[in-house]
Every structure is written in C-alpha cells, then in structure tokens.
Image (cartoon, rainbow, N blue to C red; front, top):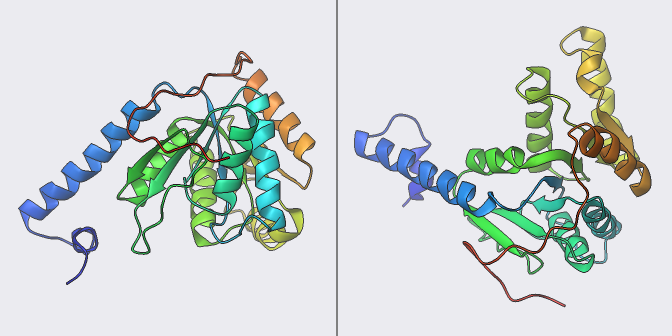
Length: 242
C-alpha cells in the first residue's frame, strides 16, 4: 500500500482525499505559525544531513551556529542530523535559541537533540514556507538535492521580488564552484540578472559571513542585538543534550 501522503500528491484524487490534503497542510501551517511566532528573528542554516560530527562541515556548521546567535539571531534549521545538527548544537552551546522544522520522511528522520523547539511537517512545501517566513538570512553549507532545492527557492523568490534585501551566504567555496559557474552562465545567457546575486556571499570565513549578515540583515532591518531567552515548551521539547 502506498503512503497516504504520497497518494494525495499523485494527481487528482477524490474530493475527500483532496480535502484531507488541504486540512493536513493547513494544520501543519497553523501549528508552525503558533510554535514559531515568538522565536525571534531567525537565520536559517541549510546543509546535508549526511555529515557526522567528525566531518569538517559539521564542525563548520557548529561554528556558524554559535556565531549567528552572538549576532542576536535564533538559529533555525531543518531539524535533522548532519549540518543541521551542527548548527543547532553551536547555537545551544553559545546560549542562544535553537529551533527546527523537521520533515517526516520514509526513513523516519528524527529531530536532533540540540533543539529547544521544533515542529514536524508532512510536506516539504509547508516546511519551506516556515523556514523562509521567520528568516532574515540563509547560510547554506554543502548539501545535496534538498539543500539545492531550498537554495534555488530562495534565489527564485529574490529574482521575482517576492522577498527583497535577503542575504544568502554560501559556505565552502570549493564545493559551490560548479554551482557558481552555472549561475554565471545564466547571467551570461540573460536568464537571470547579475543583480539577483547582489546579496549572495561565497566564503570559507565565518567572520566574513557574520559581517555580511550584520550589514544586510541586522543593520538593514534595524534589528536590536539581544540574546533571546530559550523558548518555553510549545509543540515539542526534548531533553537537552550535553
């Protein structure tokens, strides 16, 4: 038997099934809005779930998470392992807020143990709405198709002016070189404008990344630097790790 969620996304279904899709998506959005309403301005960190704690990109994500909360932001991730866990761990260790939007997958992705708060989403499109809605910037570390999907979504929203003045930082210059070459090819072909990439920084330096966020997120939006307290229990709470 196919999974119910999968059936709902495979073309037109009965009116009852279509209604169930709308209700489940609406429920996920409402639960997400309620849970994340008081978490404060966020910076979302994306990257692969496949890097363990001994990998250099996990260590980089951990450093990024700690640096982001020192700017006064809440660290938000997709809530899973790998880079996501590293960023949440860094935020927790620095005394800042650490939240996640977890996605329910066939392999049963579990929220990582460094989250103060998380919400579970059935659908990727709901998850992306939540990750974007509460973020003032994205920091993107090396990742796979999911990371590319989230990055391309953000760039598309910037290109179409659905969001503006939204800084994106790509960490790991060597990893992103092929992607950058593709973007420059698009600029040359006229399918995107060079200005679409104005607020995208590619770097290996965490201080440079934070300076970019400070200028184009903190200063631009007039945010006040203060360390937000950890959120109280809302939709989920895990025992603190370490």
